[in-house]
Image 1 (cartoon, rainbow, N blue to C red):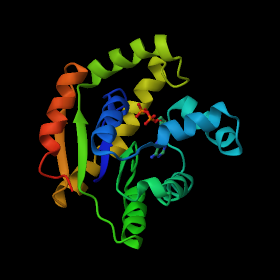
Image 2 (tube, protein in one colour):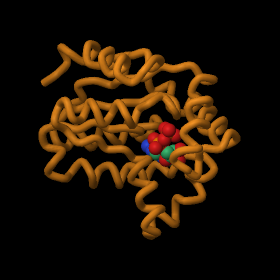
Image 3 (cartoon, rainbow, N blue to C red):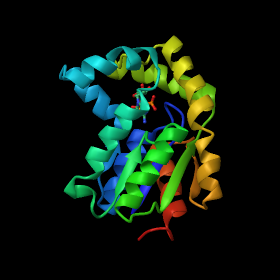
Image 4 (cartoon, rainbow, N blue to C red):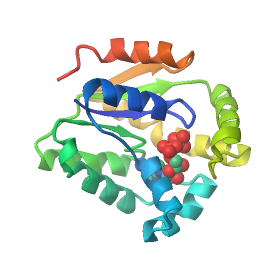
Length: 190
Ligand code: ADP
């Protein structure tokens, strides 16, 4: 199973990604988490991207593409993978296509979690109290939403044209959303 999960900030991608990955026995790869762990460990990459994450912008495509290519080359990705938060730009879609073609691999599904903007802003502000993420202030959240709608949401149409898009309503409690995802993905599993 090779798939992508995407949706606006706060849609619950990370939580659902971990569940899907467990269910299909594939690694969940979150570019956001990779960046955050590099920031935490103060690596060269972390220092380079810290300010970008703090303001809600997107990390440069070349950097992000290289990180994902490296990760996909690791052995645990042979049976499949779930990309969470990548691709986020049209250029990243192209880079992923090249990467997959080089391995004679194809995507099985692209899952879009749909949610209402105001609902997710509320969720993120609540999470901010618990997780203390540098990018969970209201101003930065609004910026991340705006960038998402401008750069990433349009990618849904590209994958829909390829017959890969699966849209699932991300509102409701975590278990309900997981059930919906399970039903929507059944039949696409390899
Ligand atoms: P969310 O989608 O909730 O904002 P993520 O953990 O997916 O959280 O991403 C956090 C931040 O990491 C993004 O706001 C962005 O700065 C950076 N990031 C993650 N993935 C990408 C990507 N594919 N391209 C560029 N920047 C990314």
